[in-house]
Amino acid sequence: MTDYVPVLAIDGPSGSGKGTVSRKLARRLGWHLLDSGALYRLVALAAVEGKLSLDDPERLAHIASNMNISFAPASDLEQVFLEGKEVSKDMRTEACGTNASKIALQPTIRNIVVARQRRFAQAPGLVADGRDMGTIVFPDAILKVFLTASPEERASRRYNQLKDKGIDVNLAALSRHVYRRDRRDLERNVAPLRPAQDARVLDSTELDENEVAEYIFEWLLGTGWSPVKVSDG
Ligand code: DC
Image 1: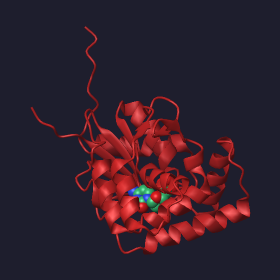
Image 2: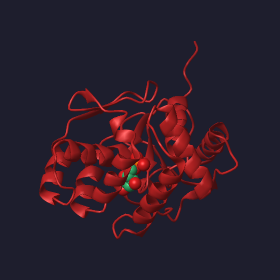
Image 3: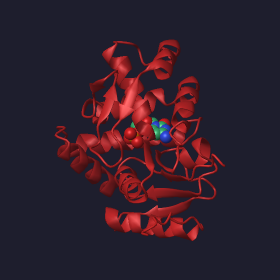
Protein backbone atom coordinates (compact mmCIF):
# COMPACT_ATOMS: atom_id res chain seq x y z
CA MET A 1 0.00 0.00 0.00
CA THR A 2 1.45 3.38 -0.96
CA ASP A 3 0.12 6.85 -0.39
CA TYR A 4 1.96 8.24 -3.40
CA VAL A 5 -0.32 10.59 -5.30
CA PRO A 6 0.63 11.73 -8.82
CA VAL A 7 0.59 15.50 -9.25
CA LEU A 8 0.52 17.42 -12.53
CA ALA A 9 1.79 20.98 -11.90
CA ILE A 10 0.77 23.72 -14.33
CA ASP A 11 2.26 27.15 -13.64
CA GLY A 12 2.24 30.41 -15.51
CA PRO A 13 1.24 34.07 -15.46
CA SER A 14 -2.35 35.23 -15.42
CA GLY A 15 -4.21 34.72 -18.67
CA SER A 16 -1.84 31.97 -19.84
CA GLY A 17 -4.82 29.62 -19.91
CA LYS A 18 -3.64 27.41 -17.06
CA GLY A 19 -6.96 27.48 -15.19
CA THR A 20 -9.10 26.30 -18.10
CA VAL A 21 -6.59 23.72 -19.23
CA SER A 22 -6.09 22.38 -15.69
CA ARG A 23 -9.83 21.93 -15.27
CA LYS A 24 -10.07 20.09 -18.61
CA LEU A 25 -7.22 17.78 -17.69
CA ALA A 26 -8.54 17.11 -14.19
CA ARG A 27 -11.87 16.10 -15.73
CA ARG A 28 -10.25 13.89 -18.33
CA LEU A 29 -8.03 12.18 -15.79
CA GLY A 30 -10.68 12.00 -13.06
CA TRP A 31 -8.23 13.76 -10.73
CA HIS A 32 -8.74 16.46 -8.14
CA LEU A 33 -8.10 20.07 -9.07
CA LEU A 34 -6.28 22.72 -7.08
CA ASP A 35 -6.73 26.32 -8.19
CA SER A 36 -3.94 27.51 -5.90
CA GLY A 37 -4.51 31.21 -6.62
CA ALA A 38 -8.02 30.84 -5.22
CA LEU A 39 -6.58 30.40 -1.73
CA TYR A 40 -4.70 33.70 -1.91
CA ARG A 41 -7.80 35.33 -3.39
CA LEU A 42 -9.98 33.99 -0.56
CA VAL A 43 -7.63 35.29 2.14
CA ALA A 44 -7.71 38.69 0.39
CA LEU A 45 -11.49 38.62 0.05
CA ALA A 46 -12.04 37.64 3.68
CA ALA A 47 -9.67 40.41 4.76
CA VAL A 48 -11.45 43.04 2.66
CA GLU A 49 -14.88 41.87 3.83
CA GLY A 50 -13.64 42.03 7.43
CA LYS A 51 -12.25 45.53 6.76
CA LEU A 52 -8.74 44.43 7.70
CA SER A 53 -5.56 45.96 6.44
CA LEU A 54 -3.68 43.86 3.89
CA ASP A 55 -0.53 44.75 5.82
CA ASP A 56 -1.56 43.09 9.05
CA PRO A 57 0.32 39.77 8.90
CA GLU A 58 -1.03 38.45 12.19
CA ARG A 59 -4.68 38.84 11.34
CA LEU A 60 -4.14 37.68 7.77
CA ALA A 61 -2.36 34.60 9.13
CA HIS A 62 -5.33 33.93 11.36
CA ILE A 63 -7.66 34.10 8.34
CA ALA A 64 -5.36 31.95 6.20
CA SER A 65 -5.25 29.23 8.89
CA ASN A 66 -8.90 29.27 9.89
CA MET A 67 -10.99 30.24 6.88
CA ASN A 68 -13.50 27.63 5.93
CA ILE A 69 -13.43 27.10 2.17
CA SER A 70 -14.78 24.59 -0.29
CA PHE A 71 -14.75 24.04 -4.02
CA ALA A 72 -17.16 22.22 -6.29
CA PRO A 73 -15.46 19.17 -7.90
CA ALA A 74 -13.56 19.77 -11.17
CA SER A 75 -16.38 18.07 -13.06
CA ASP A 76 -18.91 20.64 -11.88
CA LEU A 77 -19.28 24.39 -12.12
CA GLU A 78 -16.48 26.63 -10.92
CA GLN A 79 -18.14 27.28 -7.58
CA VAL A 80 -16.18 28.44 -4.55
CA PHE A 81 -17.52 28.91 -1.03
CA LEU A 82 -16.09 30.96 1.83
CA GLU A 83 -17.65 30.32 5.24
CA GLY A 84 -20.53 28.61 3.43
CA LYS A 85 -21.29 31.60 1.19
CA GLU A 86 -20.79 31.39 -2.56
CA VAL A 87 -18.09 33.86 -3.58
CA SER A 88 -17.24 32.55 -7.06
CA LYS A 89 -17.80 35.92 -8.71
CA ASP A 90 -16.46 38.21 -5.95
CA MET A 91 -13.15 36.38 -5.85
CA ARG A 92 -12.60 36.53 -9.63
CA THR A 93 -12.48 40.32 -9.94
CA GLU A 94 -9.17 41.88 -10.95
CA ALA A 95 -9.22 43.93 -7.73
CA CYS A 96 -9.29 40.72 -5.72
CA GLY A 97 -6.48 39.31 -7.90
CA THR A 98 -4.37 42.38 -7.18
CA ASN A 99 -5.01 42.09 -3.42
CA ALA A 100 -4.18 38.38 -3.59
CA SER A 101 -0.91 39.16 -5.33
CA LYS A 102 -0.06 41.70 -2.58
CA ILE A 103 -0.72 39.37 0.33
CA ALA A 104 1.10 36.58 -1.53
CA LEU A 105 4.29 38.59 -0.95
CA GLN A 106 4.17 37.77 2.77
CA PRO A 107 6.18 34.66 3.69
CA THR A 108 4.05 33.86 6.77
CA ILE A 109 0.90 33.78 4.67
CA ARG A 110 2.57 31.74 1.94
CA ASN A 111 3.69 29.09 4.46
CA ILE A 112 0.17 28.66 5.76
CA VAL A 113 -1.39 28.64 2.30
CA VAL A 114 1.20 26.20 0.93
CA ALA A 115 0.48 23.73 3.75
CA ARG A 116 -3.22 23.91 2.92
CA GLN A 117 -2.52 23.50 -0.80
CA ARG A 118 -0.50 20.33 -0.18
CA ARG A 119 -3.50 18.72 1.47
CA PHE A 120 -5.28 18.75 -1.89
CA ALA A 121 -2.97 15.97 -3.12
CA GLN A 122 -5.32 13.04 -2.75
CA ALA A 123 -5.85 9.82 -4.70
CA PRO A 124 -6.20 9.19 -7.55
CA GLY A 125 -4.20 12.34 -8.48
CA LEU A 126 -4.09 16.12 -8.54
CA VAL A 127 -3.84 18.76 -11.23
CA ALA A 128 -2.48 21.88 -9.52
CA ASP A 129 -2.40 25.25 -11.20
CA GLY A 130 -0.60 28.36 -9.98
CA ARG A 131 2.74 30.17 -9.87
CA ASP A 132 4.91 27.93 -7.67
CA MET A 133 3.33 24.48 -8.00
CA GLY A 134 6.37 22.95 -9.69
CA THR A 135 9.03 24.94 -7.84
CA ILE A 136 7.84 24.93 -4.22
CA VAL A 137 4.54 23.25 -3.48
CA PHE A 138 4.90 19.98 -5.40
CA PRO A 139 8.59 19.62 -6.30
CA ASP A 140 8.01 15.88 -6.92
CA ALA A 141 5.22 16.41 -9.45
CA ILE A 142 5.39 13.78 -12.18
CA LEU A 143 5.08 16.51 -14.80
CA LYS A 144 5.67 20.26 -14.53
CA VAL A 145 4.40 22.55 -17.23
CA PHE A 146 5.02 26.28 -17.52
CA LEU A 147 2.44 27.92 -19.76
CA THR A 148 3.09 31.27 -21.37
CA ALA A 149 1.38 33.46 -23.97
CA SER A 150 2.05 36.94 -25.35
CA PRO A 151 0.98 39.81 -23.03
CA GLU A 152 -1.67 40.95 -25.56
CA GLU A 153 -3.15 37.49 -25.82
CA ARG A 154 -3.17 37.07 -22.02
CA ALA A 155 -4.91 40.38 -21.45
CA SER A 156 -7.53 39.55 -24.05
CA ARG A 157 -8.12 36.09 -22.53
CA ARG A 158 -8.55 37.57 -19.06
CA TYR A 159 -10.93 40.12 -20.53
CA ASN A 160 -13.09 37.42 -22.13
CA GLN A 161 -13.00 35.25 -19.00
CA LEU A 162 -14.19 38.08 -16.80
CA LYS A 163 -16.87 39.09 -19.28
CA ASP A 164 -18.11 35.49 -19.48
CA LYS A 165 -18.42 35.49 -15.71
CA GLY A 166 -20.51 38.63 -15.88
CA ILE A 167 -17.76 40.84 -14.41
CA ASP A 168 -17.58 44.32 -15.86
CA VAL A 169 -14.12 45.23 -17.22
CA ASN A 170 -12.30 47.70 -19.39
CA LEU A 171 -9.60 46.15 -21.60
CA ALA A 172 -7.03 48.95 -21.27
CA ALA A 173 -7.34 49.11 -17.47
CA LEU A 174 -7.27 45.33 -17.26
CA SER A 175 -4.05 45.16 -19.32
CA ARG A 176 -2.38 47.59 -16.91
CA HIS A 177 -3.52 45.61 -13.87
CA VAL A 178 -2.40 42.31 -15.33
CA TYR A 179 0.97 43.80 -16.25
CA ARG A 180 1.53 45.16 -12.72
CA ARG A 181 0.35 41.96 -11.07
CA ASP A 182 2.68 39.86 -13.23
CA ARG A 183 5.65 42.10 -12.37
CA ARG A 184 4.90 41.76 -8.66
CA ASP A 185 4.58 37.96 -8.97
CA LEU A 186 7.78 37.75 -11.03
CA GLU A 187 9.93 40.03 -8.92
CA ARG A 188 8.98 38.98 -5.42
CA ASN A 189 11.62 37.41 -3.17
CA VAL A 190 9.57 34.42 -2.06
CA ALA A 191 8.47 31.83 -4.60
CA PRO A 192 8.66 34.14 -7.64
CA LEU A 193 6.86 33.09 -10.79
CA ARG A 194 9.33 31.06 -12.83
CA PRO A 195 9.54 27.67 -14.50
CA ALA A 196 10.98 24.86 -12.39
CA GLN A 197 14.30 23.63 -13.78
CA ASP A 198 12.64 20.46 -14.96
CA ALA A 199 9.49 22.13 -16.32
CA ARG A 200 8.37 21.90 -19.94
CA VAL A 201 7.61 25.36 -21.25
CA LEU A 202 4.68 25.75 -23.63
CA ASP A 203 3.80 28.97 -25.44
CA SER A 204 0.04 28.88 -25.95
CA THR A 205 -0.31 32.15 -27.90
CA GLU A 206 -1.28 30.35 -31.10
CA LEU A 207 -3.02 27.37 -29.52
CA ASP A 208 -6.55 26.86 -28.31
CA GLU A 209 -7.26 25.27 -24.94
CA ASN A 210 -7.98 21.82 -26.42
CA GLU A 211 -4.63 21.80 -28.22
CA VAL A 212 -2.79 22.85 -25.05
CA ALA A 213 -4.56 20.14 -23.03
CA GLU A 214 -3.66 17.58 -25.70
CA TYR A 215 0.06 18.50 -25.61
CA ILE A 216 0.10 18.17 -21.84
CA PHE A 217 -1.82 14.89 -21.89
CA GLU A 218 0.70 13.43 -24.35
CA TRP A 219 3.58 14.63 -22.15
CA LEU A 220 1.92 13.01 -19.18
CA LEU A 221 1.73 9.69 -21.03
CA GLY A 222 5.40 10.18 -21.91
CA THR A 223 6.32 10.19 -18.21
CA GLY A 224 5.40 6.52 -18.06
CA TRP A 225 2.30 7.22 -16.03
CA SER A 226 -0.72 5.53 -17.55
CA PRO A 227 -4.43 5.88 -16.96
CA VAL A 228 -5.91 3.00 -14.95
CA LYS A 229 -7.78 0.75 -17.30
CA VAL A 230 -11.30 0.21 -16.11
CA SER A 231 -12.16 -3.48 -16.33
CA ASP A 232 -14.96 -4.20 -18.80
CA GLY A 233 -15.59 -7.82 -17.87
O1 DC B 1 -3.95 32.51 -10.43
P1 DC B 1 -4.66 33.73 -9.84
O2 DC B 1 -4.79 34.85 -10.82
O3 DC B 1 -5.98 33.35 -9.24
O4 DC B 1 -3.73 34.22 -8.62
C1 DC B 1 -3.98 35.41 -7.89
C2 DC B 1 -2.69 35.87 -7.22
O5 DC B 1 -2.34 34.95 -6.19
C3 DC B 1 -1.48 35.94 -8.13
O6 DC B 1 -1.38 37.19 -8.78
C4 DC B 1 -0.34 35.70 -7.17
C5 DC B 1 -0.92 34.81 -6.12
N1 DC B 1 -0.56 33.40 -6.33
C6 DC B 1 0.64 32.98 -5.83
O7 DC B 1 1.39 33.78 -5.29
N2 DC B 1 1.00 31.68 -5.91
C7 DC B 1 0.20 30.78 -6.52
N3 DC B 1 0.57 29.50 -6.58
C8 DC B 1 -1.03 31.20 -7.08
C9 DC B 1 -1.38 32.53 -6.98
